[in-house]
Length: 227
Image 1: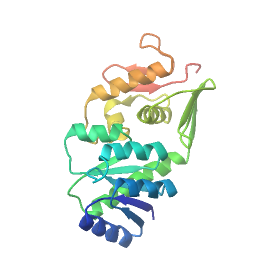
Image 2: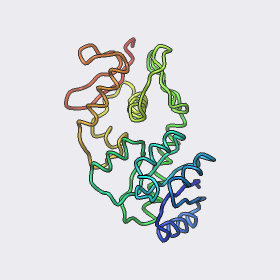
Image 3: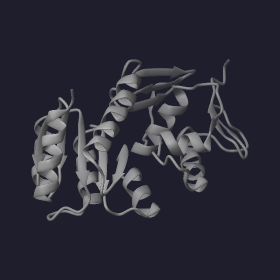
């Protein structure tokens, strides 16, 4: 069972999804506006938020950024906007998963289960250490030789994913699927740009890598430079 916060302005959709999720054993609280939904999350994060992008008071992307400023609760974006740019924008703004309307309650509930399995799996090992690099999932912080790294949400997600697979080469397709939640692939350039930003945050360059190694045409790996 999960505590689901459903932020959806359509009365019929909101009611139907709430009934279906409750019947499947979840606790569900609902909001018809971004403001009401943010208030619910601020009072208690819950386990997962399902966020409609077409809200009446605040643009969904802005609502997502506001939500991310107060909580790291997993978010599934529900949207009728199915073009790649919209989806990438939502994921880069902090969404963990997306689902395109129209969808069934069964499909949404399956996404919730899958997302919570991923989240609870990494929470079982929240702190990772690779050489002098420490990545703390619980606090969503990373330090290098004791100094804090200033990372964006997606940079942190990328670093954590690589740290959890330290020493292994992770393909760009896998990174797009697991970090950006694009199961059918996407723009490799997105991964390249974030790897470049992350490399700078680690104080490295492409010509003199320490922790972050890029395998041209394949992917990337995070290694312990002292090993």
